[in-house]
Length: 117
Image 1 (cartoon, rainbow, N blue to C red):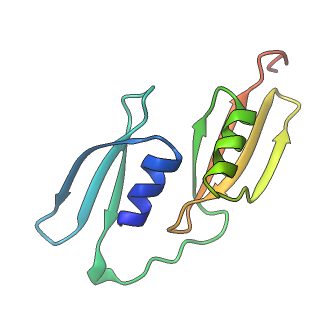
Image 2 (cartoon, rainbow, N blue to C red; image 1 turned 60 degrees about the vertical axis):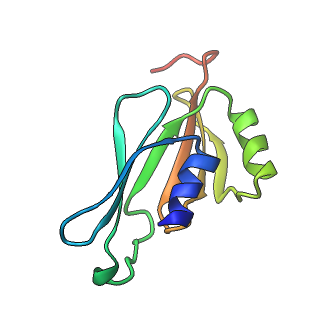
């Protein structure tokens, strides 16, 4: 849980708003991005054993203002890019990285110079 929380705060810049343990023993952390009121809940329930995430089943996406800057910051932190950068004909540029728990994270930038169709 600590490794995952550190990834979301140190690499992606999210803020931990609250941490608690549920009555059944789940360790919970609620995080938010600086530009949204939406929360992401991280949950660790050690009694259930290790979670196996299927490839391409689930990913989280975060919008960035400057993909080149995001890539530089990831490189400086030693976070490998697993796919991309890719530019779409609809005006987006994106990359993928992996969180320590196996979830795939997409960083996406809307390109202002391209028309969105």
